[in-house]
Length: 172
Image 1 (cartoon, one colour):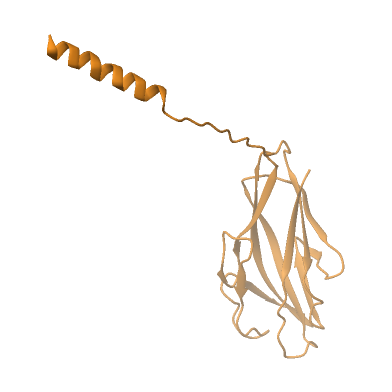
Image 2 (cartoon, rainbow, N blue to C red):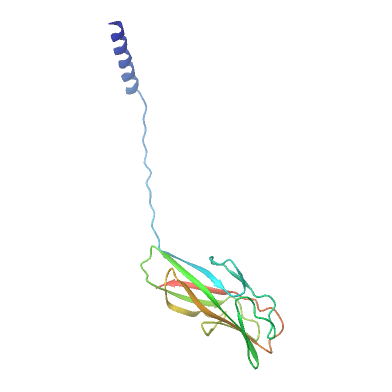
């Protein structure tokens, strides 16, 4: 009987202890808005290319000349008064949380081209003052391939022709 009485007393103590326990609660309110987005990456280009698969690739052509060899990934065509290096540039645009079915892709030079040098994409001459439309119906999640020509006049000075091609994709 003493054991039963002791057990009942222990249970009562536990129940009383629980009735004096402190509690607290709180909430976290979360707000946010999902925004649509697109991502542009350069997937390929002629020359010794690094950074493909990113938005900031680099193509090194090395020393180039009318009567030399074409850089890696380029062909060389010699004309009567100029010469042309030709290759392709692969650009991919991906989307997320967007109902757009296609996009417009433009290109523009980062600075004025060297005198006697013309930069072309898909046959259109690029400039640093206005963007050129490469496609107005680009397909998402697919690498578009664009012809790339650098035309050098025989009268151009022997100097660097460095420049940047800035691509811009805009969802339609």
